[in-house]
Image 1 (cartoon, rainbow, N blue to C red):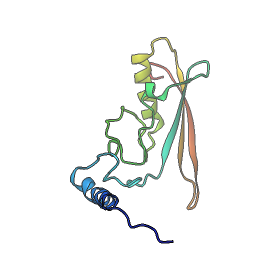
Image 2 (tube, helix red, strand yellow):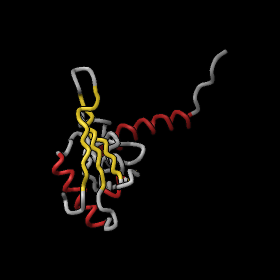
Image 3 (tube, helix red, strand yellow):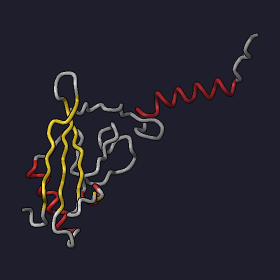
Length: 148
């Protein structure tokens, strides 16, 4: 049994889509579903996972403390079409305890007057040897609005 030849419309549609896929990202930039940004082009070597807990141990939203992850595999701000919310979390970096504590204390003092402190857990994930990825370190900080 012989398959029918594709119609002119089907062939023209396929050629047009292929041309747009190759040309549009270089000319216009990001225009869904076409993009100039290859996933993970920045080759991150580590990242942080955060948790913020109130005095009763209840998790609080990371976005409220600007610790949410904005990274989606593309460099932040590329490939998404929107400007991400501010965040201390940057894929590929791990802020030290001093910077993390100062950041959370500032937000706690500015936005959360009724909470005496929060506990922040920072887990740094990265290469543990030449062939494995895992937890490099985990820090647990108690942060008060005054930074102590």
